[in-house]
Length: 480
Image 1 (cartoon, rainbow, N blue to C red):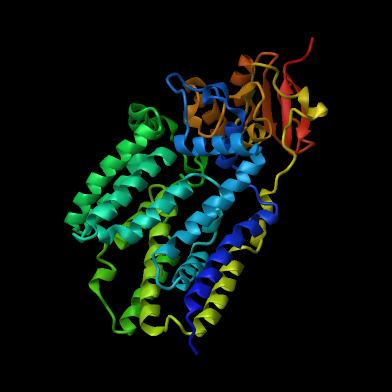
Image 2: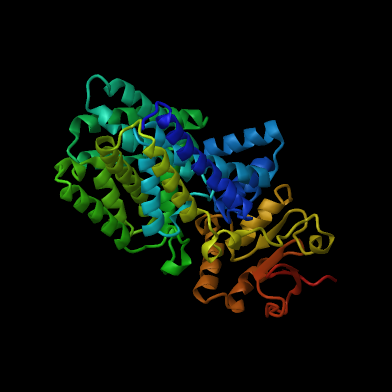
């Protein structure tokens, strides 16, 4: 049987399941544990980063300018607090990334198949998609490029496609700041010998990045500072050992499950006797495989670029298959989509291994608590800590507090002498001996925060200690 409402019904089902998924995850108590907290807390605080963190000389801001402007505007217009802004970040970014492919696919169910494959072979990747951070919007922009780049080759569509890519490059630069990452898709075009497309994209990227830099209000800063930050991180922020880095920044290993899934799809195409060299000799596939291999340098190549690119490649493969084998108006499509949507839901939503409930908000330090207030810094004080979670959680809970943090979202932002202290603490697994340089710098206004269970008071007798919150000890100089 056939019906003209089938394409609409299929699209509606596919969109519905992807919209409901982040709500279900949040409904289990999940809250992002890192940068989403500090982005939203800063929007509420209205402060500059120099008033929040103890920064090394020459640093004034570490913002993703456009994202900060969006969150600040939302706070002013709606009055949302930091928690509401985090929920908005998680929901909006997940939904935008998830539904963009429907604009370019003839068969939306092809994207659901791609999500299922990634859910099975890259276990845990969807955790990254609910972190509520602006890199998800950058990945969404990259997804659009993966679909529209062929338009750069055609004379009839090159202007329209170039204009779209220019706008996307401007948004990328304004929102995410790290404009140099746009070189990756350009390199992929060159590797695929798509010279005409590469030339058109080069022009649109230069124009878009320039426009995005102007939108920040500080065009020279927007171009120079991200590169300086990359160099600074490479030379000063890298630790001696992999375990000292954030999980997304560590060197990984090639995900052979993804490689096997790619080979399986290619083998399936060959069995159907539909082999075409362009299936692998194209910029999206080249970029995907290249970034999967570059995970050996840092996992972010795979997480932010390789996996999204291969998801588009999978979706295009299944879209082409459905177009040849499935009638667009067949009622069977609805049944297939229901099965695929249910599978996507079951792959992502269940709290397997406490992957969502492990990140429920706990007992954070709060200046509104009379018991905790005396053990938080006084006006103008500093929180010394070797755990970034202390910054994320405490700033999130106290965005208006009048103190600063020695360690924020990146160790490289710290003054060099404090970075050395921090690295020593890491290197020697939190040995109390290596906290003493900070103890020597403390004033009565400051606090030293160290993690530990209720029965494991830090062995630094020079300070008074109080078990202030869940697995958190706060130390201060003795009161006279």
